[in-house]
Length: 566
Image (cartoon, rainbow, N blue to C red; front, top):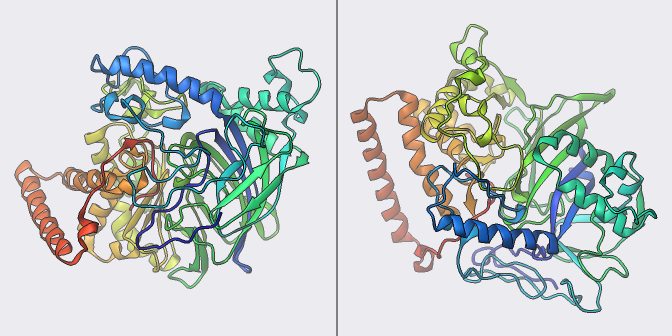
């Protein structure tokens, strides 16, 4: 059922039926064509049905509730593993009973078909009812609903993971000797639940499975806001194929990416984070509770640089003359809305070899120097977590790179590049372990609508910060760094409550910036008070010119990650 939105008053509809089935991992294989302004390729989804994660969730909630009654905090002696629906990293002072996994009397905000809106109290549009029952009962076929718009879906098929050499190790039932839906689904169930210390092996199997042949096309339909997929005879989420491949391409007018030119006049494309998140870049589950990992291979002309949310600092691989491939991966479960990509003729900005700032970045930290204040047991699902890594706690300055159009490299060298190490170090001194292992900073084109945007492993900054002196550049940099903790590692369950993360980041930008400048306590206090006074006056001005309904905050629901943050 199509619906028309009023951009001024309606929330973005969340159509994915995450109550019944979750995407645990995405494998993207894409080509970027600047001539046609289209991104085209495939995406393979590895799924887990609801019966499995609901059982895990109930047991975890009971365990966490018991611990929260005892004042349970980060660093407790026994781990409390949280399933992917509630994955997050807590700060050391965050009580469990302040978070979604331990809330009492929590309502299920999904409709009977398993679709979600932006919370029952939100002023937005709730998801439409489906003609097919998407639950685990009834005689109709199960319907997988994904958030999707402005995409041309060409084909959907089941992936024959059982045909991949070596996958027999994931079949635990000897009686399943004949290749069947049940066998393929069992392989995926075992694959998505591999322990964290086998993450490299897991990524390898995901890649190999994503290249397996199809074993049957699936029926699908699209409307304005969703892609609906079903398989004849599959009546429940458990019966539905757990590995599917979608062939699709974006549209030039798609609202998830912007095709434009950089400040040097060269073509580029980047994700804008709003107004429709990433559903016009790839079909996905967009409710913030839908946590997943991903890996992506992106091909573009050899003159272009591909930057992306990824734990690895990717380098290009030449495929043939004039074409290069870039590969990134993420092992920390995140909402699909945080996936970020930018493709352009960016130039990596580097300091002069003798620069002290550059040498600070390269200084190795010995595990023997670990500060164990921040080492403990986290409360999220199992994955390779930096908060449990003694070596990571010592990294005051994580590895970082800066990219910009060639015409702005000089300005970046003069201001931005010198500020990153002290700002990262200041953040570490206040909050401890950096949630992400590295950082790319990109000066985006002039049409970027804000001063900055934070995403996992990558940050967009406006060119405006380069002309405002070190203070403007430093405070904005500190603001976006703060979002690594508040907005990405920990975020609002409902992304309409963005003010929560923005509030923390706005406060911490002053704290970080004072530490980065190494101000005396009195100077730091005076600077904070001045900025607080300016913000208060700006708020007064805004309330005088804003409608009354825009001045009312909705009741916050703190939980999993939300989208990109500016």
